[in-house]
Length: 455
Image (cartoon, rainbow, N blue to C red; front, side, top):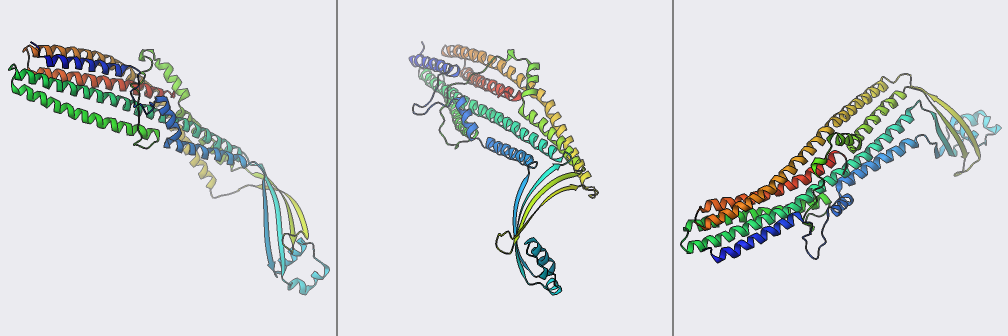
């Protein structure tokens, strides 16, 4: 007859297995009552507010936007105010300062006064406006370059945002499934301990040898190690999640029971996904924008060979007293400048800019070629993970049934304990494989969204 201890234990194991199945595939949150459940949406929102990578990307974008404003400002007029005080007995300077102060008299033409003037103080105040009229395309290309660099920084910021989201999904799903792995380990420990009690009852009844009890206890020790590793995995996965969120690593985390798997892999259209990735990938868009900026930089360097024309309007006041205006004057000047020979500096700058353009083009082309591979790899991994998940579910069902059969055979004395322990190990491995496949499905889905620029 079957010992009563085994009946009660077996029913407890069955209830535990059913509870685990409900946890794995239901949406009911498992969390502390005093701590709100951290949903995936909330986790992403926290990361987007606090992640260091995004903070750095925002700073790069701000710098690029300021660079664009600086480039545009070069087309605007400049207004400057200068004030200089001078006291001198230099004949030339005294002569010109007297003229500027409009205080030059006939007595100042005396040879002794001209050659040996008395010291004179002069306060010169000058207000000037300068305006470039034509730069041969240098300013236009500089503005175009800065604009494309700003757009590339904006695309780079979007790429960083998507990488952060992908990292959160990876860390979040790892933390959720680490809880499930711990549940599997604890259930295996409960089963192993129940088997020890059951085998001990059989040994005390004289139906099995003492070595069976010892082997069953060894199995308990092995599963206890599995629980310890799973508990460590839970702690580490939560710390990794907090790191992805930009929080203190010891911040308490309460997670839901599961994460949605998303639409079936069979619905994927690879050609459409690859085409969409070419349009939506922010890093690819940034690479193209940087290529355009490099081209505009080449044009800007070439434009430096052309002449430039500028305008300056100024008003000047001179006085012997502080900021006075004993005499004032104005000037309107149009200037022309052309470098006739600069030792080939301009040619070298053009060549350098052209090589940088070639490098940017090569990098953009390489990235464009790799996009299709990334999409196909992620889609293939998603399909494989889905199939593995189906096989994993089937494997768990078969392993559970196998364990039931072996338990009955061992109870009737038709098999040895080794077969029972092997069946128990097989069930634990099947459940862990199922969890691994489930996590791979979630990560492959996130990787596919990242590869197509759809996060």
